[in-house]
Length: 350
Image 1: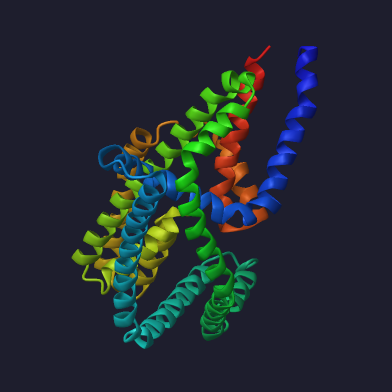
Image 2: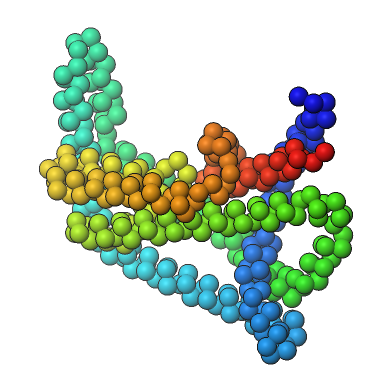
C-alpha cells in the first residue's frame, strides 16, 4: 500500500468519529430543522412558480407554497389516520375471538412439537419434551407480556407528546423561515465553500442525493406492490380487516432483515395446525407470489442504488440497531453510503 494511503487512515477514522458523534448528539437536536429543510425543498417548485408567474415577493410565495404543502400533508395523514381508526374500531370487536384463536393456535403448535419430540431418539427425547413444555407452560402469560409491552409503549408515546408538540411547532416555523431564505442560503453556502471542495465533493454529493432518492422511491414502489398483493390475497381468503392486516404486514416488511415471511409463515403454520388447510396454503401462496415478484422487480427498481457490499450493508444495519434501535436500522445504511462516497473520493484524489 502506498505511503500516502496510510496518511489518509487517520483522516478517515476522524471522519467516521465525526459522523458518529454528529449522529449521536447533534442529530436529535437538528432533526426538526432537517425535516423543515426537506419540506422547504419539496415546496420550492411551487414557491418558485408563484414568484415567476405572479411576481409575488419571496416571503409571500414561501408562505403560500409551504402552507399548501402542509395542508396537503395534513389531509393525507388525516385520511390515513381515519382509515386506521376505522379498521381498529372494527377490530376491537373481535379481539376476544382473536385472543382465543391465538391461544388455540399456540396449543396446537405445542401438541405438534410434543409429537415431534416423541419421535426423537430416547436419549434426547426428555430434553426436547421439557424444552417444549417450558416454552408453552403458560400461553396466557405470553399474551399478557405482549399486552404489557404494548401498554408500556402507549405510555411512552403519551409521555413524549409534549416534546413532540414542541418539535412539531419548531418544524413548522423553521419550514417557513427556511423557505423564505432558501435562495440566500444557497448563495451564502456557494460563496463560502472552497473551490477545491466544489470540484472534489459536489459531484459525489449529487450522486449521493440521486442514489438515496432512487433507493427511497424503489422501496416505496416495492412496498406499494406488496400492499396491493396482500390486500387482494386477504380478500380472496376472506380474512377480516384485510387492509389493516396488509398494512401491519407491510410495516414489518419495511424493517430491514425482516420481511412478509415473518408474519405470513407463522400465520400459515397456526392455520394448518388448526385444520384450516386452505387458508394456510393461501397464505403460503401469497408469500411465494410476493417473494417471486420482489426477486424479479427489486433488481430492476433498486439495482445498485446504494452501491454497498451486502456484508457492509448487514454490518451497518446491525450497528444501527445496536446504537439507535429500529430507526438506526434505516439510518445507518444511508450513513454508510456517505462514508463510502467520501472514501472513494479520497482514494481518487492525488
